[in-house]
Image (cartoon, rainbow, N blue to C red; front, side, top):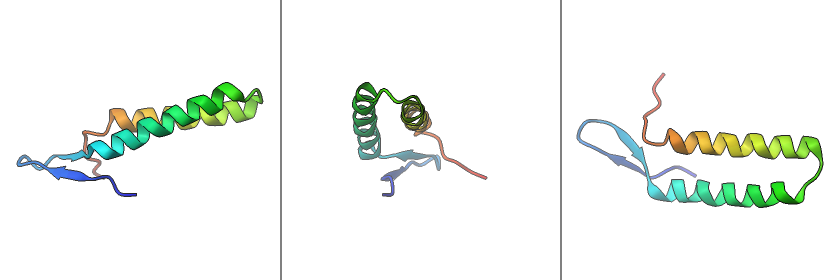
Length: 66
């Protein structure tokens, strides 16, 4: 799934709002799953996924260049 990008005059790319909403929905699902599980390793994996999604959404306004 490619994020919708809006091209601005200054050349900066901003990810579309749908991408952010999709991420927020995913986080909500993972949090629910986290509340149900008691297995330690499973919890660690879910927490890592949530952390990754949250980090992505904070960085969504920036263009990644290598």
